[in-house]
Image 1 (cartoon, one colour):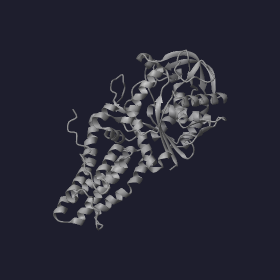
Image 2 (tube, helix red, strand yellow):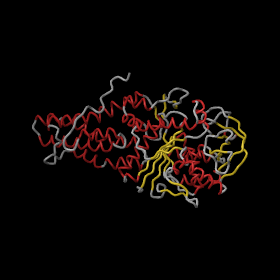
Image 3 (cartoon, rainbow, N blue to C red):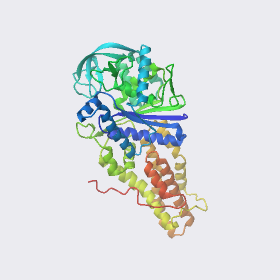
Image 4 (cartoon, rainbow, N blue to C red):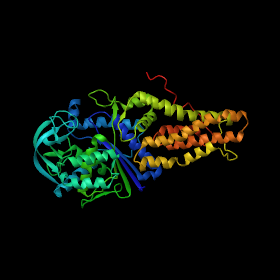
Length: 503
């Protein structure tokens, strides 16, 4: 494990309000940041998120709202920050592409690449998708629709600046093959390699004429152009944590070989992050991130969520209805990170009643009730070690729990579902132990030492499970800690009362 850990979400496009996809990526990154703060020194972990505030779609949305572009983005950014606060997101830095620290870094990167002759001017004639803000060549099209979003394309003729990404195609293929953890999960790596083997990269248009779009970062070597939003956006990962010195070298305390650098994204922006971004870094002489992890989509009835279809899930509504940690738990547990998942409130309720109410909540409440009943709220310390095979198995499970969580999150690359499955193993073992041992019979039969050992192992399970849950369900972990106490319990209401009616 490296000395430092730097994790990022994408910077979210502010042409509309945040939705479940935004919250999924951010909760996953937050979970990793919280876990790594426990594994490393807190000051050696940096969690970055932010907003992408330039481009044609934002100018269009601002015009429709009757606001200036700056007024519009200022308004929407508040919604993102409010959502992250409500979801208990512990980001360390929030970058906006309208901030001067970012603008200065983007312009310096452009100038450095231009001076290296990596950027050139040329006349362009081709097809353009305004919603995706992407140019397409005729050979990439089968009809007049955008290959990505399936909306109509516009024929454009103009002079622009192009970045020579075509020169780096062979290098990128070799780099991906030689660094199997660079793109995760493995299916995404295969997807990128397949794209690179089938297609010949066209040089990337990194500018837009100001006569067509004025809302963007000015290109330093052309007053008639602003920067293409995707070149602008990707630079945020380095503009937030460093800058270029007088010689043009990038300097940062968070981008050295002692730092594990992780970008968490959705699969719909994989190509920009796994093709454009590494080539930009290579051309600038900057090291690669360690991992680009692209998760799947949340679907409704097997269809991608879409505002136009009207099937978008508002995360704030889910949090208000079920609670912060229930929402976090469902997103992290229900689908292995990287695969598509089908979202439904029925699925949330099933997870709630099964995992949270029946398993964890029931174990906590019944254990605290027994401590109250048999020991007046004071946690017993067994006078003698009881050699019970079931206790031995639970103790062994607890002893290996942290390593299993660490392996699930790091060795297997961000398998949150598996990590939570491991945390639930001692919960299931403890609940079964209650059913098998029947503590009420131990009390009736006067088996004091056996009862003390029984209660103590249940308390140990709850304490360690609560601690292990803190990166995933921080509020729940705090509530468990408050109720279980150190030597004296403080039983409250059940954490997760069953939901009997979802209507």
